[in-house]
Length: 116
Image (cartoon, rainbow, N blue to C red; front, side, top):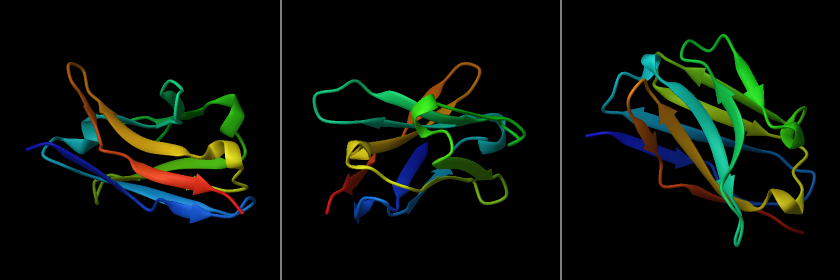
């Protein structure tokens, strides 16, 4: 059974940091490109960061470059998103996604709220 379980969300003040984690199981994690996405109320889901299957390549949306860092640990089947300098507009549900050659899996999401 394929599972992607995000954790680490919560309430944080503007300027603060959070580290999200996504634990994967039920598929060959090292063979999948992993990414983080978010969706704010009333908005479309947007891509934040992507990391290649072996972790050698990363890409970021312009609006998170320099603030967010994606990483993965293939030995532990996890992918993380370190988020710094958080802003109120970063408030959203954050999702991890696994993309293989023929299939795509999504986690259930974790809420991040940036507010004073």
